[in-house]
Length: 84
Image (cartoon, rainbow, N blue to C red; front, top):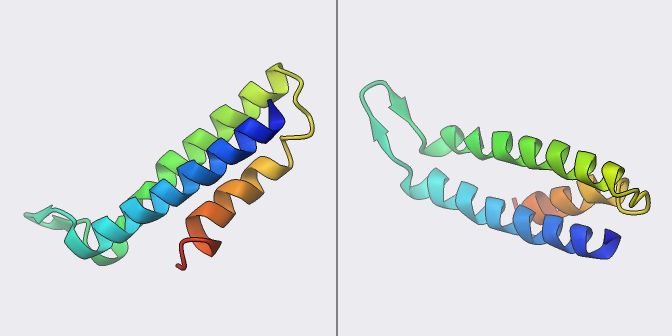
């Protein structure tokens, strides 16, 4: 359970990284708003929500070993492996 959740967090982080890069370069805009440039930081909200939900899930399943490594895997996927 713990290793699978860490791997899933890593893959989710990498996919959020590519979504942020795409939104930074080709994001929608209109009126007075834009998701281009710094507006791509909107992907941090789903990352935070997913982290809280996954931590609660691991705590309920008593997968204590995965709990401290889940935020590290999500961070590494979003920033370190992606190259931000």
